[in-house]
Every structure is written in structure tokens, then in C-alpha cells.
Length: 355
Image (cartoon, rainbow, N blue to C red):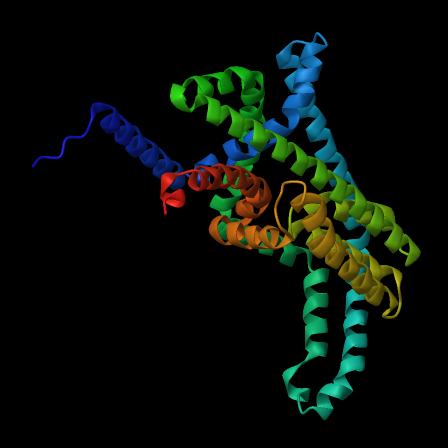
């Protein structure tokens, strides 16, 4: 008895195999796809603004250029917030850090000696080493050269990515609608209605995600700015705004803001008051952001349970690294649409309903 496979089933399995090979190729080319993925995300965010400018009579290419330049100006403005702070505070930190280490040694030294650990922590030696490193300009230069020799290929990769993203973004936005029409035309006709419905659901979820994330950023920028102002920090506004606005980059944005706040506390306050204030302000902020704002304002808007949000961040970060953390919530929203349709199909199937 021979097994005869109908021609239409052979075609289906053929194209499924082609699709799987295409996915495997994308996985192998993952590092090369980074600028394209980044440009696609930015293109999705900027396309509504480009459409509005184009509908107002501007040529689409000009509208795309205006949108890209606008994003570049925002990034430059954030850099101008951070760079002057570092330029002003790091030279002062060079002279204040050794005295801070001396205070740490005086504060915890007796306690360590009581615990029998006096010989295991040599803060005066650490103080001298840090002072020597901070005072030696050629040491910093040699360290930079060493880093460039070790990570030169990675640096070139990041520079190439940063250079390619605006170029890819320009061509994507110019051909945004024709590109999606070609993708739609390539979908099998018997699936086009369902695929269109899923695409609309995904678009609605991603729009809600972006609005929720923007609201989280604004609320945290306000909180950190106000809290640091109440604590008496001179750089409360720029540091607080930067911490809040970079919250869309999990861990990195918070870490950068925390580092700047610690530097400001060391430079502005003589005792431990500044560092304690930083610990309290940023501890409360991280708690609010992690356990209330992001799960409620972002997770609920895209229909994800708070536990699903936390799991998605951990899982995508483990699988894809930093890029996975950035894509965790929007990718989870897309997957939730697919799982929802799959669940409805399963509940309506004879396999489920047969008794």
C-alpha cells in the first residue's frame, strides 16, 4: 500500500520547508541583521509622523529626512545633557575620590578589624592606586589603546551599525507602504483574511505598547527630577530627566542615571547624606518602575500579565542578549496575538470538542 500525497499538500510542505530554511538563515545572520532590526523598529515608530507630513503635501523623501533629523537632534540633546555633566564633574571627582575612600576606610575599618578581616581589605592601597590612575593622563590613554586593541572589531561593528541604521531607515520609510503591499501579496490567498486580521491586532497592540512606554518614561523623568530636587541635588533636572527617558533601555538607562547621581552625590555632599539620598530615591524609583508602572501601564495595555512581562524580559534577554531585552515586550505582544488565534482554532477543532 503506497502513500499518495496530494499535489496541494506537497506544495504546502515545500513552502513550509523553504520558510524554515529562511528562518534558519536569519538566525545565522543575526549579527548582520542588527541595523535592519533597529531601523525597522524606528521606522514603525516614525512612519505615522512621516505619513502626516506626506499627506500635508511634503514629498515623502523630504518628510523622511525631517523625521530622521528630528530623532538625531533628540539623541544629540540627550548627549549634550550627559557630556557637560561628566566634563564638569569628573575632574572634581579625581580630587574628591581619594578622600571619600579615606572616609570609607575610617568608617568600616574598625568593624572589619573586629570581624578579623583587617588584612583582607586594604583601602589605603586602593586609594593610592585610584589616585595614581586618575592623575595619570598617559595611563588613561594607554588603557584606551589597550581597549581598542582588544575590542577593535567590536568597536568597528558598532560604528558600522550606527552608520548603517539611518541609511536603512531612510530607504525603509520611503518604501514603507509598497514594501508591506509586496509582503501582503506574497501571502497565500486562503490565509490573507486571517493574516490581515492578525496584522491589525498586532499594530493596535504595538501602538498601545508605545503609548504605555512613553507614559512610563514621562512619569519616571518627573519622579527622578522632583525627588533629586527635594534631596538638594544641583543637577537634579538633567540627571532625573535622563534616567527617566532612558528607561526604555532596561538596566542601561537606570544604571547610567544612577552612576551620574552617585558622582553628583560624591561631589556635592561632604558626608554620607548624598549617597543615602541616591540609594533611597533610586531604590524607590526602581521598585515603582519594575513592580507597578511597567507591568500596569505597559503590560496591561498589551494584554500581558505582570508575571508574563517579567518572564519575557528574562527569557528574551537570555536568548538574544541586549537586543532581546529591547524587543521582549513588543515581541511578546506579537506572539500573544498568534497564540490567541491558535487557542481559538484549537477550541473550535474536532480534536478538542470530540467526546
